[in-house]
Image (tube, rainbow, N blue to C red; front, top):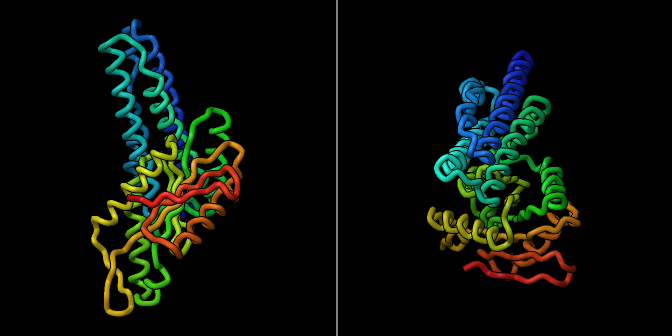
Length: 304
């Protein structure tokens, strides 16, 4: 956690980042939706306050690199998307399509959210990220999912929640020392960070269990993301010992759901865990699709 005498400096810098980007956003929106007023283009100046914060934070011993990397990726995506929209407006003189603008708006909202998370999680209570994996802390998973459920109810923006478990982790722990088994957890964590988008969230729960919150994704998009993650793991060609001197590939199984607004975050995670745990005795290396229709209306789709 950052020492006390640095906190005011960090907070003041973050407030400046919020103010600068809010002003930039308003100027940008005017330019995009009123392309005929060419003088608006001259009023758009990308704020530099985040770059200044980034340099300072990168040198700060108490600032977790996961926070810096996440914010940097979001900020980069934000500016790239803004450049695309401005260029389209400048060259064609027409407004962007709703889908493109909504994507830009979502990235902007997530950037602001992560700035506010940084204020709360790191500067105030220090529980934002899991120190072992670099993924988001399990202490915040339910409040984060509830936020997405509220956004789904207000704006109709779909999202998916997925649970991931390392296959045969009890076997891994039995035939590996602690450092080796923890190495597998860190490997999966690193692949998850590489696989998700800048505005998605990933959590390390405990043991062999991970949860992903995939925003702006329906069930088919969520399954595609999990398949990409599994392909990355297969490309690593990591083997584990069976205990009889033979080896097999390290694999993982996943269960995914596309929530509805009336869902309860705790029940959602509980049901994903239950379905995934019960299925692992029958098959591994699978993607299970959980449909919140009734306790009996669930089906399993094995990943190809």
